[in-house]
Figure 1: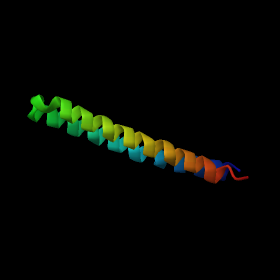
Figure 2: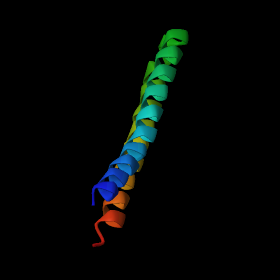
Figure 3: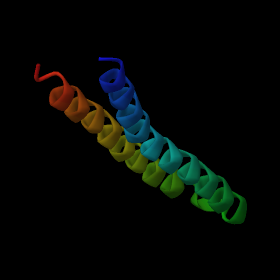
Amino acid sequence: MLAETFIILMVMFIAVLGPSLVISVLGYAVIMALSRNPSAASKIFMGMAIMLVFVEAISIISILIIFQLFSAK
């Protein structure tokens, strides 16, 4: 029981770690792009918002899949 709980927690940690790394890399890239070309801020922010929506959706879907896989008892 304890080992199964630990496995579930580790899988959830990995499922959330991937999108969080993508969000941090995206934030860094946006800051660098805005420092190089501040006049393109509206286009950069629109692209960033779309990317964040997709990354968060992937994270939520992966957590839902984990819940579905491990709650079939």
